[in-house]
Image: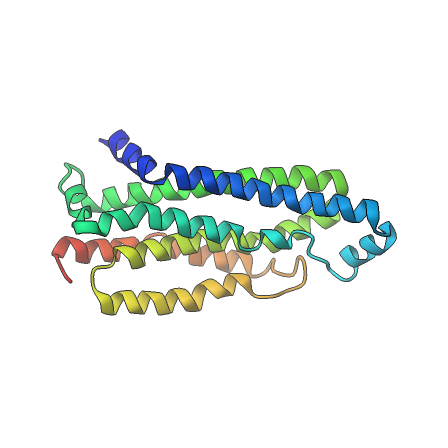
Length: 222
């Protein structure tokens, strides 16, 4: 049964996952093509100065890639379940309804985690070719909220899409519109370190929010 649910989720999202993995890899590649160009065709001393003292974000193109993929995968995964209330067929499986929802959520979470790990592995590997650790580590601290935003957006979109009651859906949209921008607050490179643990807690709390919409769907509320 578990394999059947996972396979169903894979069928719904596979092309979005492949497209996201490809797009994210291309974005990271473009970042370092730009870095290489700046090293070769700009004054190296000036470039180092802007990185170290003016806090140039050479990784800025990566900012919205994680959340874009998360939104696409979440919609691809959960919107089909709302068409003709297909999610109710899933709830008739010989499994606890909450467990089914959590399995679906876990699938999406692991997909995002694997994709983000791929992007970060490539990012760190190429960064190490150009920069020392005192530039790479602050860069990772700075981009961490962008990846956390992807998880938060995935959970909120799943909650909103699956919610059958419009007044709650509107409320969730307001909550998401308030919380998600917090992950994109402007700050100097490396200065987001104190905020990252708080953002992790927000992501963890939002990860179980889908159960609220699932509860109302099971009750048949509209």
